[in-house]
Image 1 (spheres, rainbow, N blue to C red):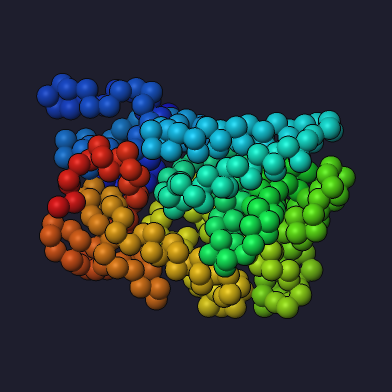
Image 2 (cartoon, rainbow, N blue to C red):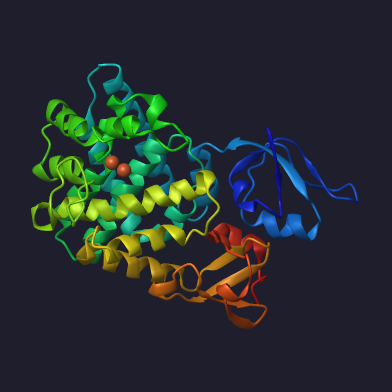
Length: 365
Ligand SMILES: [Fe+2]
Ligand SMILES: [Fe+2]
């Protein structure tokens, strides 16, 4: 159990399980032990003058999916859960040296990606997942979905969109051959540990060859997703023209998802920070501009108009975001449009999903 100050570290509360009831000064139970704290609870806790609350671990990924998506996207939530279970079972079978049906795992993903691209606000899905438990499966699914999204934005033919989804789903499979002590280490890796992590691209490539009749795109995605356009990547330090397109796309969305998750786990920074990192790596010539820019534009459009919780507990609406200053959008707050920059030490804490928006009502007006 950990006590968190609502005013100082609200980002550390979201999606964690309450370790005790939260009681108001008047003796009313505001939140019950065992409940999961959501972004929309923060304004209420601040209004009630609650200073500290006790929380345990992050809610399991599948509980988060259920709570956030079951009402509005029931089919997507069910398919996501099945995909998650299938991937987990395949990875653990391989880890134990047993046979695993990777072809089945990727076949299922085709259905998930179709639902996500057709009927779900993908931005909402990716925005709303917090915590580090079972990160590998969640990250794999999200990189697959985002990869497919970029394929769609680029108007690729549908079979190619499906393949990039599959490649994203399996891009980090090599990590199952690397010690958990390194994979799960929350602190900065030592140079020796980092060298070990870097092996996951080649190990994954080898696993795909051994476990399935993998399409060349899947092999390329796994082997080259950490190569960078300026030659600074690994394992081979390839330059732009030598990096297959599928790996260039995965490079962009992999960075985005990894930084988004990192934020939720231990850093204090806006959810827009992950987009800021992608933008700066595109400008530095590391990530592909061809695939990075349409992705960035999609995400900027998705954020625009969204309802957000600020770190001081207020609710605002994003009016406009400029690429040069992505973490300081123009926001509508109490009927005034201001730059987030003008609010000292305030940042965006969370983006409200449909269910939370409904629960919080017309607080933005
Ligand atoms: Fe990777
Ligand atoms: Fe990755």
